[in-house]
Amino acid sequence: MSETKASDDVVRPRDFRTPVGRARGLGSGKTGTGHFWWQRVTAVALVPLVAWFVGTLVSLAGADLATVHTVLARPFNAIAFALFAIAMFWHAKLGLQVIIEDYIHQRALEITLQLLVTFACAAGALASLYAIARIALLG
Image: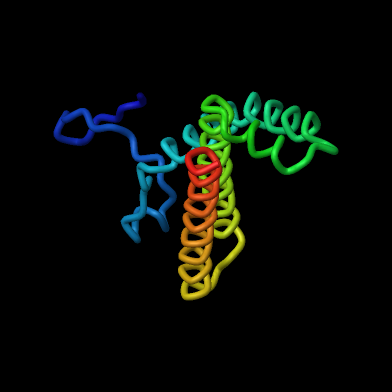
């Protein structure tokens, strides 16, 4: 890291903020890296899960309801569907959060949309998990 010497010979880290940022006291929010990595982790997890999901759907094309229930009730398939639902809704929430933060500039609308996205993704994930559990456990 670049350092500068002050007049009293004390070494201080260099401040790379703009003058306006310095005046306002603005700096890093310290949370962007975690958000970035979680979005990448969910994307990597979704690659094999989407391939499996599409393969399963294609294999069930033309099948009757009893066959579909039997396939979905298998433990591996139920767990994979649950992981797919969780990863998909989490990834969607993270992506939509970034879009809203970048393109919505009215604070009240931004907060409203963030809450809507959070609740919609949570409701979608919970509904999916409930449906998967119901099919897997109750047949």
